[in-house]
Length: 244
Image 1 (tube, rainbow, N blue to C red):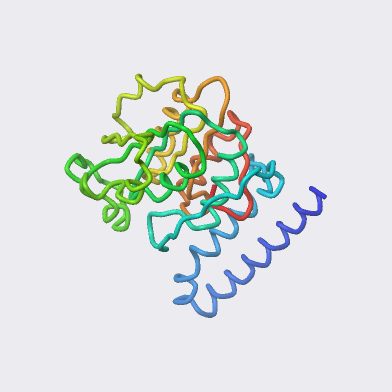
Image 2: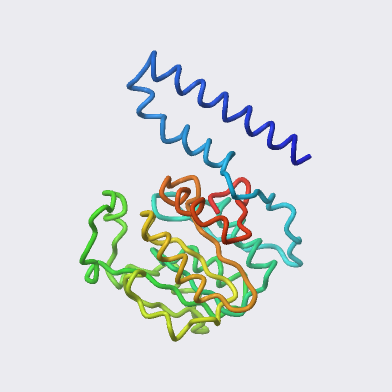
């Protein structure tokens, strides 16, 4: 079955790139617009050093996964990504979770209503953002005020299990949380150096058991490059059908 899957993936990628080169020759303007999607499909299907895991193969949760209303937009997780994340949460049943990258807190809220874990979530507020060289315009637009960060989880934090932390993930002092987390979610700045840096901190945060999840695999070329460069150090898999 695995050989058939690999063959099908190679055939799909081959077809995608044949179409891409055809467009490059015959319709260069259209090619420039669709090139990111071609690369995304290619990265999703073929990623050297990184395995694949069908989310359906994860142990089924005893109780239904709770999904909250979400509004699509840049910076948040899609419904399929949230579902894949929550299948992992229900599977490993973490007691302590560290999220690098809060944004509006929709992901945080989903995690909170689907487990009893203590959640620590870190984000960079606009007033602390000193160095943004290399950021895309979209990433700069994601910088929010302290009041805006995490507004999506507040109504689900009546028990005080969600702890908001502020700071730049490159320079934040993680020592108080080192070695105590069962799950770490890396979903902050998507620049290559940031992903590598956040991964190093994620490893320090993780306890004796648990998992690290990276978001925007496939969506961001830098995320793909960073994860492929360190895949030899991890038992790393792509959750099929998601950007995790």
